[in-house]
Length: 109
Image 1 (cartoon, one colour):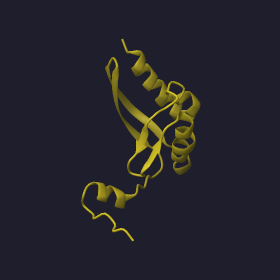
Image 2 (spheres, one colour):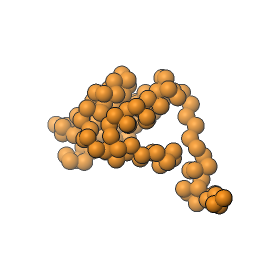
Image 3 (cartoon, rainbow, N blue to C red):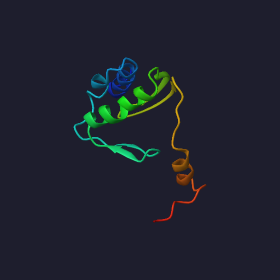
Image 4 (cartoon, rainbow, N blue to C red):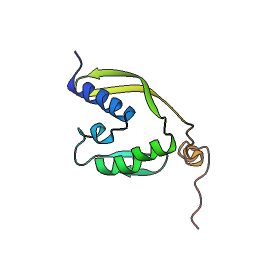
């Protein structure tokens, strides 16, 4: 039997695919910590996450969708692997290369 945490995770993915971001984040705490390291952005509330992060994904790729989720349920901990399909995604490759130590950090001006 799937734990309530896994059920919540699954429901969040289904809500994302339906573009119901309020439902997706309805189980989030009032204060969250979500960091997109590649963009250097952090979100501390569900509202901020919905408005600034999730909406941006849909704007950038209107057909974006989570597919093939696989939930590994360990009660209090749930891990999920999935594939995101949709439009092309272009991340800031320079920041990624700097994080990996393959490109030097810019010097201070």
